[in-house]
Image (tube, rainbow, N blue to C red; front, side, top):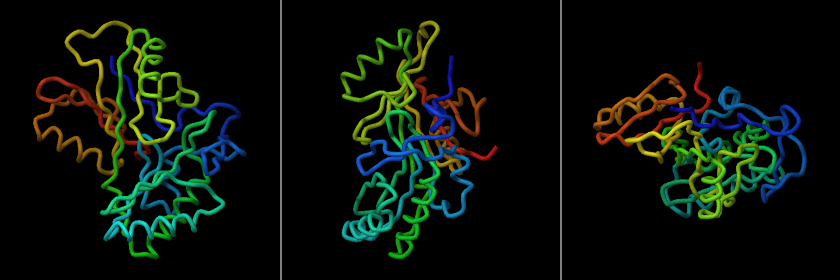
Length: 249
């Protein structure tokens, strides 16, 4: 049995259409309207961004680590009072992620649209070009017959916590490591791997990534859920999924 990986923001908990607004330490302080990936992509001013498995992300190319540090300072000034994104700085560029990761909701809110606009404007002012096609996130999926017992083991081993409203997902509380998704199985699947990788890429490059994997010797297992999900296998049968959030229908 193959199931679609959980999509970002599909399971808000609490009052409909509301999520926790996050402070600098990502704790809950007030409410904010939730949105789906497609709505985020459709909003003007979000062209630099792509919703992946773990939030809305953007990559801005910089010429050096020092240039990246200056961009981070500009981002901090631009979003002051509105929220704090997750930022990764490397010599080649800066990756920014927007996500509400509270106790009752894990996903995107309308506030993230304004954050994205401000961050993109700060990058443009410094001449840092966005490269949406350079983005991706990775999720590890584990097949489980007794899911609660399996989740408990991995929660303790990794030091992860449950994702809000989703007993089948574990996330790194520091938002650094890859999330784990535990797929409920009805019966054992002999001769098939029980752990596989889900690669989340921008919706407008997903088909290209699938084609590249097939050209490199992969095999298409199913594209029944394309353009949201493709299941592939390597030459020895090890499976992997390519996922795309917010793809136009």
